[in-house]
Image (cartoon, rainbow, N blue to C red; front, side, top):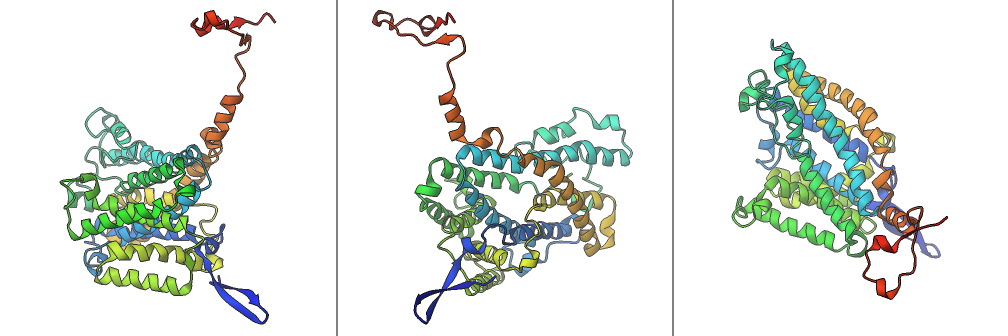
Length: 422
């Protein structure tokens, strides 16, 4: 994709005008789907270190403790999500927006919880020599509790009984049973959706756009405080001292800010290369969690527009990235339980990725895509549609409104309505 276009302004002369991010990412002519799939896959390779018992992610040392390879990938997810979700909010009312976000995130999430609690865990339980009847009890950390404690995205428990506590490298390391350690980020993403929903409800995305970068700047300031003085906000604002919450929300809002001003944000190779260089330099020498996140958010969107057209079809219609993300950790724990981590880091990671892609394919075609067919149903029709229906609804059949004499003005409404003789 070219980064400039020529516009004639005088005979024999032409001016080079840079494309905007909006133009560069227009329609499906981008690699956002591919990048999300790559980022989800990177998370699997990062989690392989602790789950396979191979030690810490070496990326921590390369970045001087600023980020793991997985956290870098999740950050990319949030930047892309901020851009796409805000774009969606600019073309929908708040009812439509929230309905579609619920359909996108919850059905597949509930499916993985149920799959874990009532298919995977009982198989592992029985394979360990326990009876199936002893699995379905009301003891603490039972399978039903696994669903009810986690259904609303707030992670109440990671384990079912102590199944993985002593049977996996990670369980032995942390002394607990963890089935899915990836889903903790979903509540932060949902909270970001609610921020955009508020912007939709109050007309911010269309009539007061400046508030989006203002919120982003406030988050940037909070991020600086948290990075330079960890725990400094805990006494006065514990909510804001959550480093992960602020980092991910800040990254999401960077994507949202680019979306709001996408027709004015320049897309160019020069800026893209500069942003990539700044991101890499801050990762290596410091400053990634502040300046580096800004550069990285632009870079990932630049990359989505810059990758060759031959790969843009990947993820354009079938988005397997969410499925890979929510099933990856689960698959890695299953394969670790089976002892496949002994095959070595590369084989263990590749096998987990292939199996996760298979489950992601099923998740998309059996759950996610089917759920999204309901996006224009019910609440998806929007606030205006339903308010119009309410205003246009007739009086109940068999009743008609009649004139009320002034001396009966205080008579209850049920007496004011008379039966229609017809």
